[in-house]
Length: 438
Image (cartoon, rainbow, N blue to C red):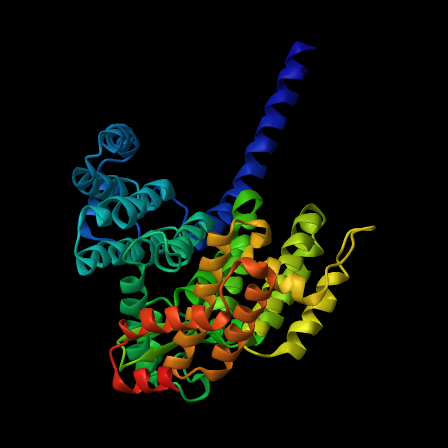
């Protein structure tokens, strides 16, 4: 009896081993396809990385853990330069450890860069963080959604946002680099020269076919600006993402598209030496479609509806400041359809003012005065740069702010006089001063 049971157990074990063996080869092929087999040397790796991968074997992990613990202590102590070398060792020992690549890039772009005072020095370290993730981290971890998201974040936040005091230098440096590559705001996809395509793919990991597909969905993007690149890398990370990373990629896409709508078109004023960021109105339909796609996801529906309504509010104010009241009113009517039951909708002018001033109507007179003067300044500023439609829109907005302020404030012409005097001292070119005097 016992002998029979033993034979059955052995036969079952042999069957299980045989089944596992049948699955081994497909699993190996799948891991190789995604380059996830830690026992194999990383393709095209530097000699040191290949040596540590093969020679140290399992001890690589122990050594990398010890270095990682040391890195955490150096982070607490603020020893950021020593961290650079330590993180380099960790990534060489464990090239498929995505946290090390993300940490290393963050340290250079955020911690090291701010230790310098010169914008060019800061930009050098931010640029190092970008190239590290793009050229090495993703090369050895091509299916790691977090690294796509981290790379997109450097474009969205470090370059695109205004948190760093030298963010304008970063924007201009990247814009000049991309303009030299594309010879304009975007590639000419239909007549793209082979050498340009090769540089895009080899040096910047930019796939022209994917870029063209994105623009077909979201509208024309200005690839000299960081918003387009944040969307691109989040878009590339989506196929590999799940859970938090999927949500993070989705958020990066609509947030960056929203930023592109508000400030996604680049213009240079060579006379004034200014990098001028203008709205990209062509992105708005694609942004709304993207939000509609996210609204269809049950877990996101309520949040995305509120965000979509907020974007419509942005559109009302943007078209108003561009002196395009017909479109502003159309988006205002769409915004009203999302009102809660029983919520009394404001009239158009009240909505424009509240959306612009953030409810400043009840503020003290000096605050209202500062708002009026700043709006009058914007009107004169855009007129001096030659953007007459936007100047007219801000002029109307200044009149609306003055009307809402009541009798406590001087006439609007007084605010215009102060703003003109202030702006005259800031302008460099005679042409801009002449437009200001008109």
